Image 1 (cartoon, rainbow, N blue to C red):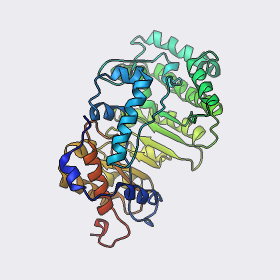
Image 2 (spheres, rainbow, N blue to C red; image 1 turned 45 degrees about the horizontal axis):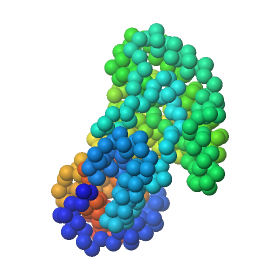
Image 3 (cartoon, helix red, strand yellow; image 1 turned 30 degrees about the horizontal axis):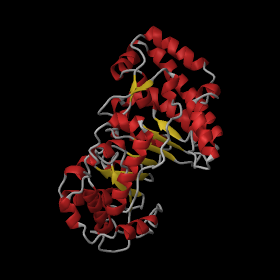
Amino acid sequence: MPIIETEFMELTAKLDVRAWWEENAGCQGLTPDKPRCSASFSPDDHWIFEFMDVPSTLRYYLDQAYRNALHREVNAITLAHVGQAFFDEDTWRTTPKRIENLFGCEFGYYEGGTPWLEPVTDDPAEFSRVLDRAEATDLRTWALPPSGEYLAEWEERTAAGKPLPKLGTGSRGPATIMTSILKPETLFYWFYDHPDLMRRFRDILAARMVEFNRVLREFSGVTEPGWWITDDNSALFNRKLYREYCYPVLERVLAAMAPGDARRYQHSDSAMGHLLDMQYALGIRNVNYGPTVDAGLIRQKMPDALINGQMPPFLLRNGGPEEIRQQVIADFHKAGGNGRLNVTTAGSLAAGTGVGRMRWFMQVVQECCRYDRQESTLYV
C-alpha cells in the first residue's frame, strides 16, 4: 500500500494542489518579483520502492512492462494527492553507454538495491592497461555501435514518432566516476602511492568525457550548451585532492559543454561545504547540496546561485509538522531574499516519505515563503 500519512492529510485538507502548481509555474524567475519561492520534488527509484513496498527491485530494472505499470500506478496516486506525475510511463528497455563503461566499469544488479557500478581492478599495472584501452578506443563506434541494442530501440522509437531524449547534457562528476571505476580506498591510496598513474587517469577522463559527450550530442541533435553534474562522492575529497583531481576535469568539461553563461548545475547529497569556493570558481550557479551544507553558507559563498534546497530529506520524512515548517522558514530567511531559492529537499526525496508530508511541504511553502505579503516570514 502507498504511504499516505493521515495526520498530514488532515493538516492539508484545504490545500488546492492544482492551484498550487499553477502558482508555482509563475514563480520560476530569479528575482523577488513573483508571488513566492518556487518549490519542487525529486522522487526516484529508491522512493518508489518504499512508497509502494515493491517486492522485487530486480524485476523493476529488468522488466520494462512491469516498470511502466508501476510508474502508471504511482503517477495516479501522486496526481490525486499532490497534483503531479513524476515518472515516465514509457521507459526504455536499453540505456546508452556511460563514461564509466569506457574504463571497464559495468553495472551489477542485486535484489533489494539499485544498480551498482563494479570497480574494475586493484592492480595498478592492470589499471594502466585499462587506461591504454580507454585512450585508444574509437568513441564514435564504441558509443553507438551499428548493431547495438540501444541504437535499435532508438530507431524503433523514431519510426513510431515517439519523443527522444537529448543525450550528452550532463553526467556524474569526477569524484563519483573515479570512486566507481576504482574502490574509494584504492583510489585514495593510489593518489599517494601512484600519483603519475592517477594524474593520467584524470587527464584521460577529462579528454574522453568531452569527446564522448560530443558524439552523443551530435547523434541526438543537441545544440544548446549547458551541463549538469551529479557528484555525491565529492565529500570524500579534501580541498587539495579535489583541486588536483576533480577541478581540472570539471574545468575542461564545462568549458567545452557549457561555455560562457550556459547553465552549470551541480547536485551532491554529500557534505561538501569545504568545496563551495571551487564550485563557484568553476562558474556553477545552480546547486543542490547535501543536508549538512547550510543554506546561509551556500548563499555566502555563492551569492548569485540558484539554490535548490535545503530541506534535509530525513527531516521531511520523519519530522513533526512544526519542525518541517521551521526548517522551511529558516532556509527562506537565509537564502531566499534575492529570489534565487527553489525550496526542495537537499538531495532526492527520501524513501519512505509519503504524499501527506509532500502536501504539508507544499502548504508550508505556500504560506511561509511569499514575496507578495509584507507579513511573509522573510520580513519578520
